[in-house]
Amino acid sequence: MTTRNMKAHLTRRYMFSASHRLHSDEMSNEENRATYGKCNNPYGHGHNYALEVTVSGPVDEATGMVCNLVDLDGFVHAQILERFDHQNLNTLPEFSGRVPTTENLCIAIFDIVKRRFHKAHLDKVRIEETMLNSFEYAGDL
Ligand code: NI
Image 1 (cartoon, rainbow, N blue to C red):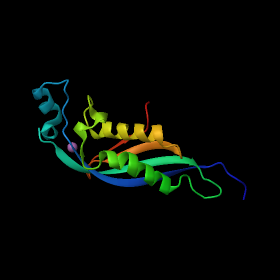
Image 2: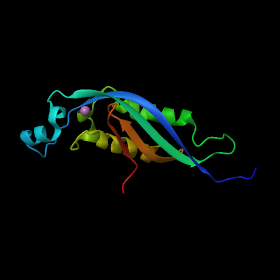
Image 3: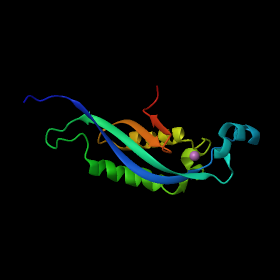
Image 4: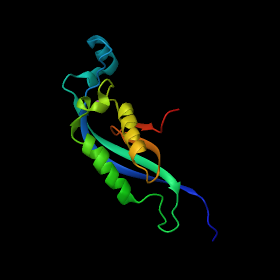
């Protein structure tokens, strides 16, 4: 069989829990309540987030893999789950001056993986916030 330069994708799923309160300092309390509804509750609320990280690249001829899961898991555990699991997202530096919506959480996680994980190309980050909501970020337009 001839060598083919085919790109494959790998998606790995991780679970973590965190709390947040949707509140923008740029808006009045009334505007915040109107915009975010119950998610503006002063005491916040929690989610069990399902995070999916998708990477891609050529399939290594020796290993048959796009990316070694040991490398991806090690990175995500150390740099993402350690940072966000069981945290109040509003208190983290990533969300100083940025509302911790799940859209912004996708962007924060994408930026960390993109900047520091170099074993494969990062395609996208997807987060399920509830059974009914999921969000994706794949870099700037
Ligand atoms: Ni929420």
